Image (cartoon, rainbow, N blue to C red; front, side, top):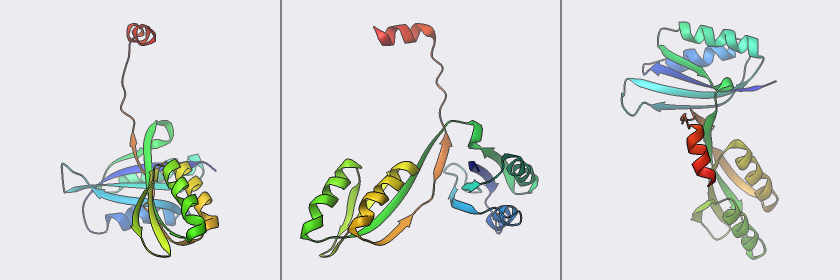
Length: 173
């Protein structure tokens, strides 16, 4: 089944997150990740970004019902929209003299950052799309993951930049 990333702009009020999540759970849909952030220009508005997996037709019905909730301002299903999406993960990895060099190489390859170093473990922060996060986790898992936290996906529609054929010709010159 296809994965859906949905952005819901809502009035920042008590219980709105529970009502939005309730529409999914009452229909048997699991929310794989969920983030909520206050709008930087208007603290009375929040943006909920959630990822779920499900049948396109049923999720279209859920989107329509989301739009009927009083506190919902706008619903965007990013299915038909190109997006920029990111996720952040912090992974506490077990280390010893034998594995420290290997972990350093992985951190460099993924442009990750060591945010805490202890005698037996290192906490690494990685930001990227879901594929990058999964690949990083797969590489450090054999070293020994002691603890891990993930933010869940955040996403925005890509900015549209119209270019004329004239600009394309100059770009090739």
